[in-house]
Amino acid sequence: MLHKIKHYLVSSDFINVLIIILAVSLLFGVSIFQSTMTWRTDAYFHMSRIYDISQYLHSGQFPLMVDVHAFANTGQAINGMYPNFSLLPFIFVTMGLKPIAQYQTITYLFILSGSLLNYFVFQKFYASKLQALAAVFATFTFINIFYQSSLNLHGVWSIYFLLPLAILSIKKLSEPNSWPYVLGLAIAVSFVLNTHLLSVVFMVGFLAIYFVYQFVKSQNKLALFFKTVIAAVISVLLSLPTLISIISLSKNHLSTVQSFDLASGTLSLESMIHSLTNPTIFGIATPPIYGVMLLADILLILNVKKFSMAAKVVTGLIFATEFIISPYFPWKLLNNTPVAMIQFPGRLVPFLLIIATIVLFTSKHLNNLSFLVAVILGSFMLTSSYQTSNLVAKRDFPNFRDAKMPHDMTNFDSILKYNQNTKIDNEALSNPEFYRLYSYHEYIPQTAKKNDPDVDKNMASVNNHELLVNNQKLASNSFKVTHKNNQLIYTFTKPQTGAINLPVWYYQNMRYTITTDHGSITTSESYRHTLQIKTKQTKQITVNIHNPKIITYANFLAITGWLISLLLLIGNWVLSKLPTKKFVLK
Image (cartoon, rainbow, N blue to C red; front, side, top):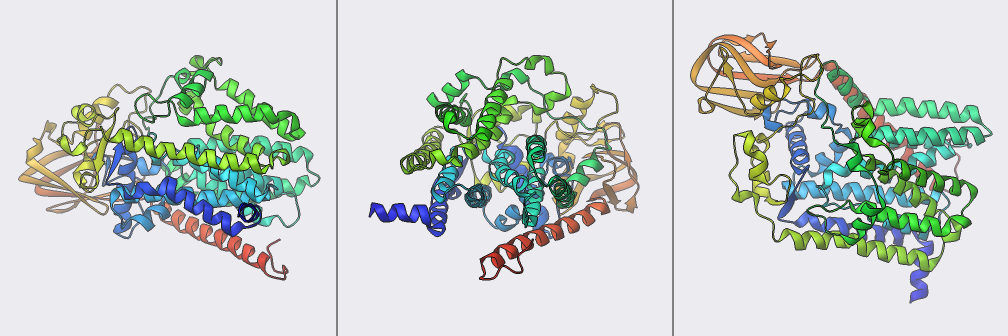
């Protein structure tokens, strides 16, 4: 019996794929059936993103660059500045589900598709089937779907699943018959770019270093350079909606992302040990990947003598990078520099982990049955502990539905226990008012001068839905706001006349059409950087918002590019399995 199991694990892709599907379903799919989910840190931000995008897709249109249905219904440019193009197909196929099931199914599909991709990519690195399977299971330990709310880590997880493909593609580009890898490199970089900007900046940096290494050793430098340039052009095409949105909105003077003390986000030996001895994911728990990084370091040190020279160099670079992101590097000196945009030096840990995984699980020395089975079983048990920790800890969490939804934003943090933990259910998540509670400091229009002192005041007034008529605040019970498709509709209890300053942010290049009881009316930018009109008596104001026309063209080109690229790759794979390989893409 054991001999048969060993035979299937070593020789059968079909069996290993079934094992991956089963493992992902048990480790990450069970949460789909939860009746409550954990509310903490970025959960509100990403649940709001999903809700807003789902509403656009339900109405049969692409998402606007600004959010109408969420983030306090203020038309804030979260969609335009925080990439979502890679998420669109996941949101589209799940938008018929209840909010918690949709949220967790997106995560499940993301991990499943990435794990299956990694299984075959590692074999292209000449890993055995069992090594590839062990690498997939090892990657599971990097993923805690409950830590800080899962969706905010998709940018990180895309590195786990697409950096190996990108590295493999560059490795193969100078070889004959390597055109499929041109598409592979383009797709890998584009997917990450369309998910998380900071992750793709780091990813391109790592790939640039690896490209230089391959270029120096390549016997066919011209082909490597030429194919890399083509991959870059295709990647830009596949990322057009994201790139154009950011470029378009950057013409405005926008508030930046929240800054943190860089030194507080470093990787230390103490935090790595603490991560292993404090597996709970709640309270002041250290990110689990820090502990996994320590385990990877131990394996690298124990086996480095038997690695190839290239693997030894990569191992040295891993430890050098760990030193750079440690407290021993003077990060405090960089707090007020452009480097501060990374927020946490520990962001590099996921890159180091997946590179260490490539080194460990492509090593011929470690192609050992006992070692690989131990990795598979140990990884499964460690990852399952994230599930059990969540179930045990969540029992004592207060319910969000027991708190009243505030209309005063100043009470948001205290009522929702925003920095702690709360259980939230589908009833709350299905209520449109839930997404009207709060907005964020990022990407708010402001004056050109640095450190605009009025940003916080303007943001607070807009988030609190303060509508001004002739510079006087209108009582909140004097009007009602509703949203539909790409419209915000303000209905007044009594007719209003004069200069009306709406709590809707104004962005250049967005197309705003405002209608009142008297038809269309021109709009201008107010001192709050919001929409402002002058009107005769009206009981209703409808704000229609449209993307710039170039975004429509960009969406069409990108979708067409993705479909053609995927069809070419799938077609090439199918043809390669036929008895004759005459027509395979070369």
